[in-house]
Length: 419
Image 1 (cartoon, helix red, strand yellow):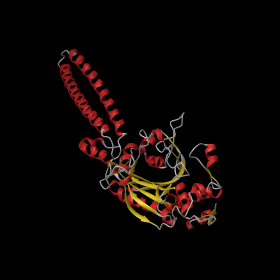
Image 2 (image 1 turned 30 degrees about the vertical axis):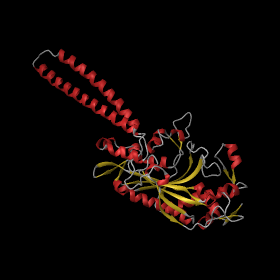
Image 3 (image 1 turned 60 degrees about the vertical axis):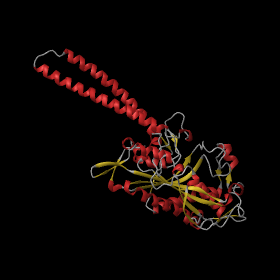
Image 4 (image 1 turned 180 degrees about the vertical axis):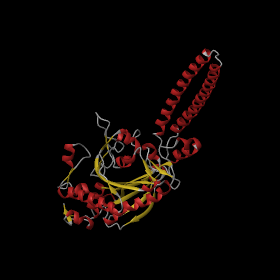
């Protein structure tokens, strides 16, 4: 959530941010008009209260003089009713402003490239040598369908975009999860195993609600949602709490399944396991001092990169432009792994600094010199497990199967998997 105080002081900052994001300014117009009405109502309430206080003083003086006060009491009651009416209207305006603030996206950091869509994203660096292309390999969904990934029974059990991993594929998924968690723990992250169901307050804290309700799986009879990412429970771990400055930074990692309706992805990546309604991911979350959060972002990106480097998977780091930023993000880097069958890089991790945007929504603060400030929150995939499996199946593929990356062989107890 954006700071209303900041918007009042510099409304042009909001308009410029929305323009950079290629976003309509209609909500900003509504917010500023409501704020204008709110300030007028507040001034009216203050004036009425001052008038009531003046009458109270007169009543007190007349009482001392044994003078009649009935007319002043009547006037005071009328003022009290007016004040109550104005305060009700003021509260309605506050609620309407809060509902708009929940729908406004974060302000991009000054360093973010300005552009309308992904075509304006900036490649920061690449790593690894591309050894295979579409001419050298078959897509993972063709070679794995025999006995590693059961697409038909997954669809039978749950529907489209669900699969069953079999045998060594299931073991590979588990090995990747354990490898990633072990690596991130070694890098100083504390592993958590959070609930996979969270309430609407928690979803609102990280920005999934109210704007993206159509993308979430909701329990019909409870105020509970299946998490779309572990970012949601991990970031809300400190909701409505006050940390001490000395506690920061805090670093969490977690494996969870993730559940997404992918409502905006109709007919996109319909083959294979690139885009599923249920998928596994290892998530990284950091809570930072405001002045250090962009340095922390670079560290988090390096931590996510270390997964792909150790797996020897070619990838590149892309800085997202303003028009391609996520709703809650002030700055984002995507890690894109090379998929030979598609002859292109595909996103496997997204690392974002949300600044104080989520902390304001979830009310996460820290104490510094007896003053309370909002923390900065960061999140990133460390990394998406299913897409990592796809990358291994294709980048390490030969005519009979694929090799298991060296760092996974102790977890797997095998050095290759045949189709």
